[in-house]
Image (cartoon, rainbow, N blue to C red):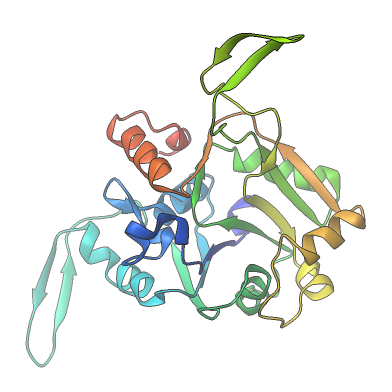
Length: 268
């Protein structure tokens, strides 16, 4: 498959309870960085590589996504609206998101991640041999083309992007039995986690997922794929940041407002 032909499935159904001050009104993927929600930033990063077909797995406050995308062109461009029995809207500007196809897939308000993928998979086309799968709450400057190339080369069913999470705390420097200094938040942690930018072969849905609404991807299905030797990795050493709490929300907005947001590296 050509990169531009691969759909992008984004998990957008969670409640974001650790960002409660904001997510009582909005689902977490719709919390804004600057003027646009974080899910838009994620979509722009994929679109920079030609991916323009999106499947959003919706749950909590799905109507917020519906309102945003149904009225997107009106938000992004000047328009003239003729009222009356035969209303008409004339748009005066082209928008860079022209050509995006966004499927708003209801996957249940209380469903877990594996079921959301299982439910939304019906919107994959017959020719879709694989799809990108991404969480709706993290931005990165990951090179999507290299991620896909790695997936083709490793021949695995799933390829996940390994990232270094930002350390939450500073660390002590210890020499034998004495403390010889402190390091305030080293730039990267030593370990790696799944950064949420994944390539998934379609057969994963039929072979590993069921209609169990309480199934998490990260528990049984991913554990089984890994145990079967069918999960590969793409190592990303660049920028990655989720928005899991108020501090991270403020950090991402500070980066955006500074004009130095690292995740727009490939945007045009």
